[in-house]
Image (cartoon, rainbow, N blue to C red):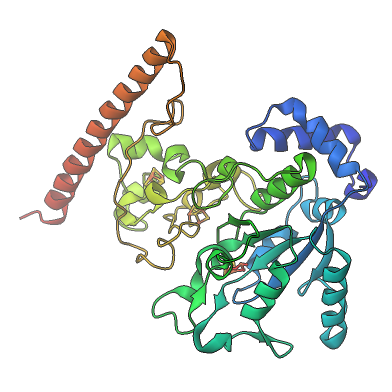
Length: 370
Ligand code: FSX
Ligand code: SF4
Ligand code: F3S
């Protein structure tokens, strides 16, 4: 990588790599290793294909700075094929893709953007006379790993909303009989930092980051939005907005009663934010409830204003994880911490339940004054 091309100093570049290490839950000192990997000549080959989607994922990737992330990506990976960004068109584009696959067989990362329609043999999305279904399967068999970017590729997203006329299906289902690992980076669009950090992890350590049961990197999707939300103190205190523009909304109260899906959606939106546009640049920060765009079966499936079930009441982010697997042996100190955490969680759940009840009673009184 040529750091000069990024328009930043070496010191800033190292700072950026250290921040990325911390972002992935690694010691900041590993930032040096990430920087070394980024600067090495070895750039992973990436082939990026697109099906049923809006191109929002590429767009969000190219609209950033700090340091200009688009440059960083293009300097770090070898983007050997991308329909949106490649210069050739038509037959030449097809040839470029085939050449990229041949040259990097077994080594390239395949990025799938968009859902895959499978109904009627996949005829609802065809490129160069071939169904997207066939393109995904044929390309994946030669890939080292597949990254499903965005909620469309991860879960079906927008095109899979009822009645799902084209049979829009996520990549992991279409590839479930194949050996290739599939990593999901959901979000509509996916946060580009979650994507580039996953690629950098692969590049630096030659392994994928730790994934959860839904094949999402834990560093980005390990916490519910509700756990890190800046409006959480209002939720805990029972202060809600009930209508857009009402007093609670104007005061920045919790958006739960307006259908916020933060309590059932795993993503780092409140901490990572979007578009490098400063604080509050995420849905809830702008005053709109999270609609669960990055969660399977939530965004595009549960109506916008339907209230989420609080399935897992949790204490604030300062407390230990509720469902962490038990380590051995348990020390007296750890047991004390765990006890305090569980106590806090039980206490918090009771307060939440009480506030929700109290608040809906208040609301009933307010809305039905007779
Ligand atoms: Fe889907 Fe992304 Fe939403 Fe759009 O790639 S996740 S519609 S932002 O473009 O696929
Ligand atoms: Fe934030 Fe939504 Fe949770 Fe309220 S319900 S605290 S707005 S995530
Ligand atoms: Fe999407 Fe909710 Fe984040 S709508 S962008 S998951 S706050």
